[in-house]
Length: 174
Image (cartoon, rainbow, N blue to C red; front, side, top):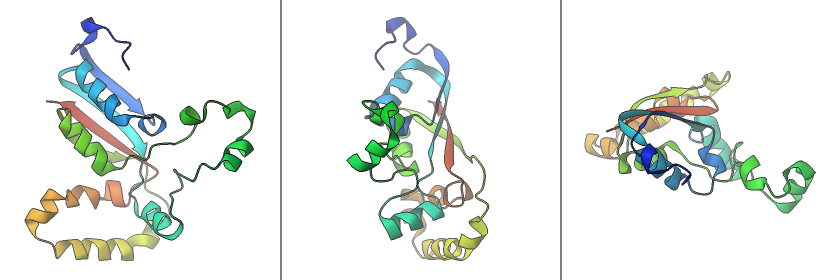
């Protein structure tokens, strides 16, 4: 990320990082660099695999991994073919980053989240509505302070919990 010189510091109005953070070794450094480059009130659009939608949460519970972040055994990598040899880190999802971690990083480096979007609702999301209802009902048993501290409204929003494969975040540098 260090290829921008001092003239570009705080000089950029918009940065878009689409399906990139999960491919790099250090998403924290990327967010910090975005903050360094964007001017005050600059806009950042990020997208990452939505590892917190209800379907992915259940896959994690049942199998220990999600559809976006499967185990990367040597055997699995070998079966990918020669095209990926030496480029596994770039070609594969190596760093799962959930909404809660992204929000923490964005706030840490001076961003305010303006809005969350989902790429599209999953067609079978209706089948998960009873579980989603239970999650939301149990959440209401917690104090308002605890729900606010834990970002419950966002983590249980339709965009996250019933979201599609991709979570899109629109943030502004404050």
